[in-house]
Image (cartoon, rainbow, N blue to C red; front, side, top):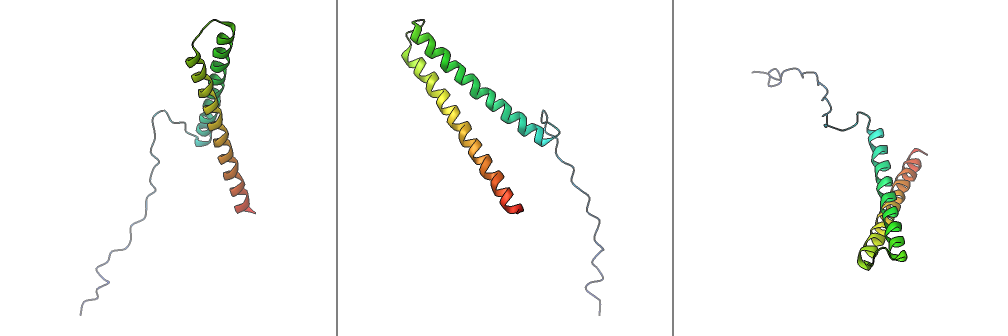
Length: 102
């Protein structure tokens, strides 16, 4: 009788898979995340400044575009609220990691 296990070859060593290089992506993911947050904060700042400029222009009579002023103010409000939500989620994730390590 033939041994059924004799036909099974020895396992080959596993070769590691090389990471996929994304064009334009930073080599260090931490730096990429930090740059992403910094860019987002800059965008929030720009929308806040645009809203302030639109409000000042409307108040001084440089423009009579009420709709444009309100859109700029609401855009600034929404971007700020989004950034605050992201901050809250990041803090909750950090706290959860701290609880898991304790």
